[in-house]
Image (cartoon, rainbow, N blue to C red; front, side, top):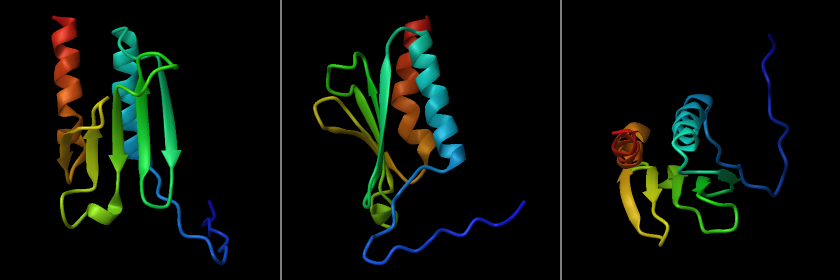
Length: 112
């Protein structure tokens, strides 16, 4: 396989995105929540400052949870954040796993 080199575009900042392992972990959680009947839709927003995965109960509502990756906060509060429906920060950290833990605990309660 060859090496992919991005074509530079003058005047445009780089775009933040999810790596394959991160997106796999997030989509795995999304799939389990869909199977439990909690989530029905999702959206991904890739911007210059952050990459956001939003999970919805229904498509017409605000997202129940947003998972944000902000590399600019890597050295301070941690680049991962779990944001609730009202916009409050539920969990913030340097690793994705502990940030997703509150949603995974909620999934465990649904199964019991």
